[in-house]
Image (tube, rainbow, N blue to C red; front, side):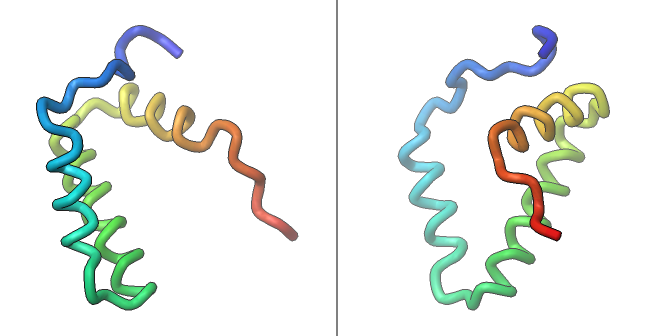
Length: 70
């Protein structure tokens, strides 16, 4: 990975963000929760607005996860 993607902790109040994320999912069924995550990813991708950085983030997020079965 290049140095373009910041992987160092940068949130001023990560616990507050985590609580807000959990609260946003509260009361949603699985399908709505997945839809919320998809919408959030697209909104944040728009904020980042750099395809190379987004590709790095996708690769890093995918790293170590099992490939789909089939």
